[in-house]
Amino acid sequence: MLERRIGFTLEVDIHGMKAAEAKRQLELLLSRAAPNIKEIVVIHGYHGGKVLQDMVRKDLKHARIQSKMLSLNSGQTILILKPPSK
Image (cartoon, rainbow, N blue to C red):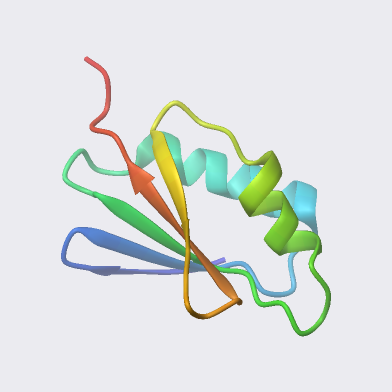
């Protein structure tokens, strides 16, 4: 999983991962994301199938996720985050 930070945004690329592994990695990332991170852009692709896209958009759950936004790019989903609970 490739990851880079741009201001208050994390961008992660899960291309080529199996859905279960990608879900586990994203859950870990959400748990350890810095409090000032406001969104995570998940690049999952869609040309090679929709397994990762469906996992991110339908199956991925975490206390930090406030909402999910569909991007104009069908190969990515934006996770809007809540501040971590104290």
